[in-house]
Every structure is written in structure tokens, then in C-alpha cells.
Amino acid sequence: MSSLQEPTPIVRRPLHEEAADRIRDLIVQGQLAPGTRLNERLLTAQFGLSRTPLREAFKVLATEGLVELLPNRGAIVSQIDTVRLAETLAVMGALEALAGELACRNATDAQLNEIRALHYEMRAHHARGDLAGYFKFNQAIHLKIVKYSGNAVLNTTYRQMNGYVRRARYMANLSRERWDAAVREHDEILAALGARDVKRVKALLSDHLAHKLASVLAELGRPVAEQAA
Figure 1 (cartoon, one colour):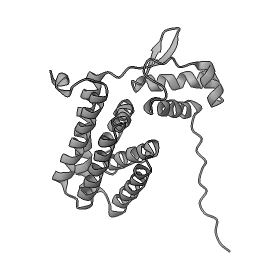
Figure 2 (cartoon, one colour):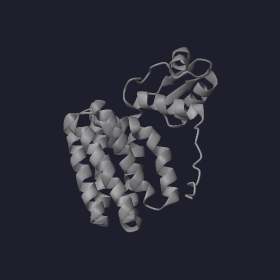
Figure 3 (spheres, helix red, strand yellow):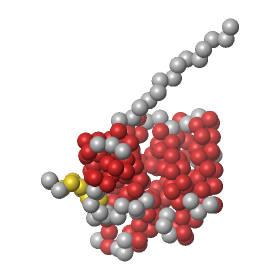
Figure 4 (tube, one colour):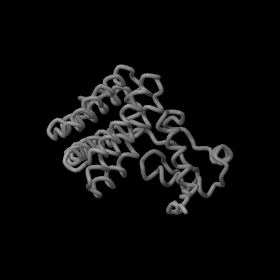
């Protein structure tokens, strides 16, 4: 008589987290532009929920810097603060470099194969010109590298900061030239990870974010030189 497998609990996420994910995607992908008022009536109808979890979602997105809460007037999509963006990406570049170093040393071969599989999926979406699909796997790759660093504090800190820069990371790929370059950079990162080349992984991950920053500032019409001034 065969034994039953260990039961796996069904995880139900809070409604406000689901709402936050959906609104975040709309903001990141540019469907909700900076300055857009978030219409509670329309969003509750669109998502099929009440105003209470929707307002909780607004609070979550406000902590990420994606939404600005207006006293007694609801919420709007926040403008991109280029100074804060530059400072955040500089810190994240250092965090990713450290994560890459630790992943080279601590990740198992099976974990590196997970990252490799995500890379191939990401490349397939790039080949189809599917930016939203590409971005989903792109983010998964970066999060896996951080996770497999084996440093829980680094993982938590990185995830807290990543919400704010997701919109900028997506925007960087609106330029086909930059998007193609980003894919080539990911090819190099994957190869360096596979070779467990600590020095090269650190440099590639740090440069990767620096290139994204330059691309985003160009999209916003502000030269990189002005950021350093």
C-alpha cells in the first residue's frame, strides 16, 4: 500500500499584497505614469476588492517610493527622484557585487543551474520582444543571486530596496540598444558565475547597474554628469 505524500498547505496571500503586486506592475511597466491619480473606485472594480485592502496596498507602495499618499485626497504615482535613484542604485550595485562574490563561493551547482535556467527563459522572451516577460525573469535572476549568497541580512536589505528601483530597471530596457546590451551583460555574468570567478562577477554586476542608471537618466533627459555635480 503506497503512502500518501506529505500534505502541502495552500498559501493564501492577503488581498492587499495581491493588489500591491498588480499596481506595482502597472507602475513599473509605465501603464500608470508619474503623477497619475490612483482612482479607488476604478481599481476596486478592476481588482474585485474593497477599498480597505486597496488602501493598504497604497501604503505598501508608498514605503517603496512608488506611490505618494495625499492627506484626504487619495494617492498618486510618485515622480522618479533622480537623486534618490542614483544613490539607491549605487548602494544596490555594491550589494549585488557582494552577493555575486558570496554566490560564487556558497551556491551549489544545482542553485547555479536554477539561475542558468532562468537565464535561458529570459533570453527567450528577449528574442520574442516580450519586455514584460523578459523583465520577470531578469528580476528573478538577480533575486536568486542575492538569495544564494547565503547572507540573510543582504537578502532582506536588497529586497527592501529593489521595490523602488524596479521602475527604473524596466525603463532602462525601453531602449532596444540598451536592452540588447543588458542581455549580453547577463551572458557574461552567467559565465562568470559558472566559472566561480569572484573578481569578474563582482565587476560585471556593479557595472551592470551603473549602465542601467546611465540609461535611465538619459531616458529622463538628465545627463549623468549632472548627477555627480
